[in-house]
Every structure is written in structure tokens, then in C-alpha cells.
Image (cartoon, rainbow, N blue to C red; front, side, top):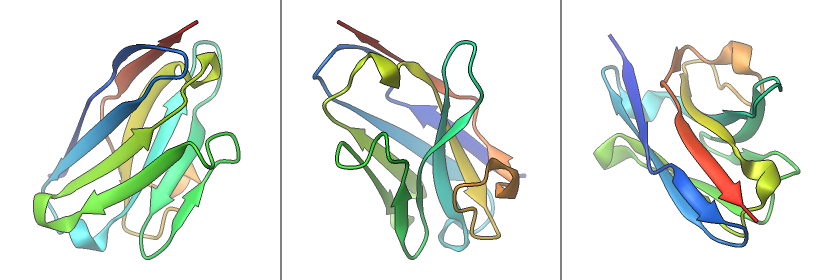
Length: 120
């Protein structure tokens, strides 16, 4: 059984930074493409970033967010800088055995989410 546990969410003022972490238990972490998605109240879940042998970002976070991974720690990170109110959402970590890319449907395992709230 594969489990993903996110941490690092919280409340921050606009312009601030947060770093999210996601630890994966089960399976072989290096085999997974990892992704971050987010869901704001009343909106659909949306792609944020993914990392496998390449990285990809949503246009809305490009230049502000950085995804990285540490295979020795079975952990993927999302460094979020220059946060604004549009970044307020529940952030989900996901793992894909199929090179998930931007498509949530291609991810096989999901965490429970961590709340990020940005205040002005």
C-alpha cells in the first residue's frame, strides 16, 4: 500500500513563502513521477507542478514555485515564493507510475492535502 503524507501548509501573508513536503511510504519512490495539485474553494482541482526526469509548472506559478525531490528521503517538495491570494487552496501531493504530467487522471496515489492560506 502506498501512502502520501503532506506537511508544511499554513497561513502566510501575501509576498511570503512556504515549503510543502510530501513523504511517500510504500513502493519505489524513484519510479514515481510526482505532482502537486491544488483546489481552491468552489473550484476544480488544478495542476501546479510535476517532476520526473523533467519538471513542468502551471503558468500561474512559473517563476515563483519550485518542485524538487529527494529520492533518498522518499520526499517531494514544493517551494512557494511570492505567494498571493490566488494561491490559497488545499494542496495535494500525487504519485504516478505513468509519467503523470499535468493530468490528474494519470496519478495513481494521492495524499490527504494540506491547507495553504494567503492573506493580504
